[in-house]
Length: 282
Image (cartoon, rainbow, N blue to C red; front, side, top):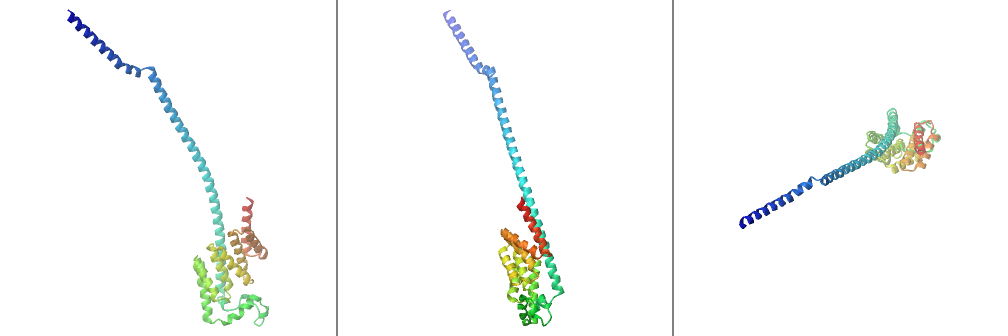
């Protein structure tokens, strides 16, 4: 009897232990389904939503900054386009001026192929026995002309034409070399003043403004009666402006307008002065 009771007591204890274990096992499951766990989930969702909202706000700020930067760049691009257009217009005007003067010189050369072997035009206009009435620079060059042989005359003309051809083709390095050699070999030729002018043009086209200034000044000082003086004065002013010598350049251009008012050089000088005035007024 006692043994049976002991067995029953032991069995009851076993059942109680199993029940307690089952309750402990079910406790976490119950905790997960509790209102506190749901609140934690909601809190986590809210935190995630806040993070997403913050990311969107950051992206919006970045987009606005990019838009402002693009607007600034657009303004800079428009300003650069305006400057490029101005440079293109200036280049076209200079090229048209150079082309027209080259064309005039070619026509003069074809109509009068022999000036290189004779005295300058001012001397030719005088009577055969009136050399004293010619201007001083042409008269000084006249004695050297008879010393040229026909072969030398032809060689001088060919050398000049070759240098001029290089200039017309845009080969300014070859043209400057050709005109320098022409001046050295034929310093008293009637085409020497023109050679100095086109030498300056060759240097100007390659932005070698200082050397261009020297060529133009030599022409103005040594050949003041040359027909190239107005154009040389104009290009001297251009060169001074390119070298940032604004006051000197403006003064030179004004001298073109005052001394040669009816020349094409005066018109170009007035146009350049107008653009300088507009830029200064901004």
